[in-house]
Image (cartoon, rainbow, N blue to C red; front, top):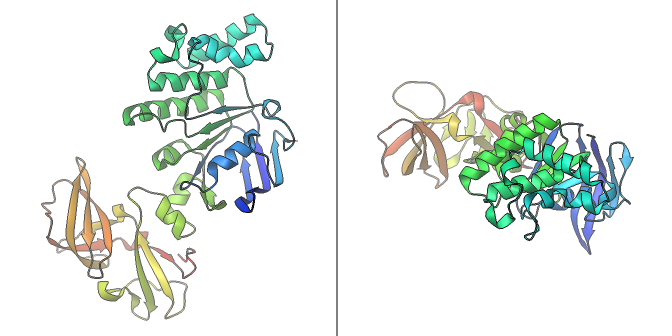
Length: 355
């Protein structure tokens, strides 16, 4: 396997700049996940690494070798698409070995590589089947197997699970995680699914409008988002936000009240946004502890032992708090919501993290 380095990368389509000064280091053997909203540039970045999109400026190196001017076949990468891209008239074995056959690899070596990949992916009973005879999960495993047989330096995955149903997504996600450990593979993986990102990645790269907003370990981004965009994008349900003003008594949330919290590293009168995740809000009883907000219950989502309650504050802001067990809450109930002071996030007027 090999490391990937991207420096000052730019990509434009005409006058539209879709990638802006991208700097990224994918370490040898690591699993890096690119996330962000539709149109943020994550798939374009992946295709640029693959050589499917020429870059406007900057450099891409794979294994210490600059690849900007190399064709995709010369970059020693393998790409797995969301559409599987299998040949319908070929059986599984032929699909997996087609790239090697096209490259002139001896038949015996093709059979050996296909057999090894089939064993790893548990596809051995399916080698004589055609794609139409396979489930969605099996087709995706065949597409992954086709990548494995090439023994690339880097695997590139472009939303490979987006066509699968919920149960298959979970199963295939686990298989990809096991495959990464087994092969010690270098993987760059694009997804819009935060669960995939959080569970698979060594490093998450959050993109927005063609730029990298933040990159780091999954829990680093979760607990210390660099700005409002990352805070709102990472986590499901999303972080709750409350606009306020720094005062000598704490943070004034206007109609929602005053929060007596330690003053942030911002001047008095500074406009800030307070953020807190649903699991760090709770419906309070008479016990003390933590700042509180008054709210009215709008909706209770029960997911078993855990669930979420949607709350409307006096200002009209809607917040979500996590609940456990049967709280007895009903739509229209009045509730006091306690905020865990150890898990408050503050962002300045420019959206950047203050504390």
